[in-house]
Length: 78
Image (cartoon, rainbow, N blue to C red):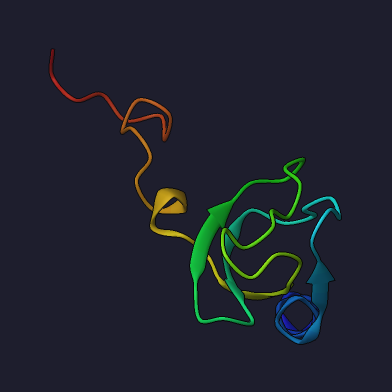
């Protein structure tokens, strides 16, 4: 459990530059106050008006919580 908490803290402290590969699925915030959901393998994009920026991991996205019941191994009755 402590290792998971430590890994989460490392993600939140780390900053990424435009053009770098996304390492973790989740919500990211840029220096200009914008938020964006990115998945592993994406590239951090440029800000549409300000150009290159830095990104900070802001947490898990809602997409991580919205899984199909079938994916969780539960039968949904149809």
